[in-house]
Length: 125
Image (cartoon, rainbow, N blue to C red):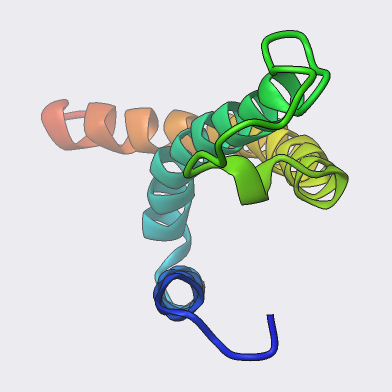
């Protein structure tokens, strides 16, 4: 693990890409940022749920994993307690963000609905 591999370099690029996209959302207007996060959070939740579930179910001695270590598969390095703990806490944090975004969406959708009614009607709003 002293020497970086091709896989770790690729993962570093993916993490940097996600970080840049998160900073881009910080520079958006409030309505656009809310729409961005409402689209991004479910995708992240799904990804984290799959990763955490995979690690938990297929770890050696797990529910679907083998008790004996035979030939190493592609996902073998992921099946450890560090990856599971990271995935579990990230999943909990993003679920919390998702709940907060749903609460935050309420006033914005009411405001947008009110502005559409004012635009289509001849009444003073």
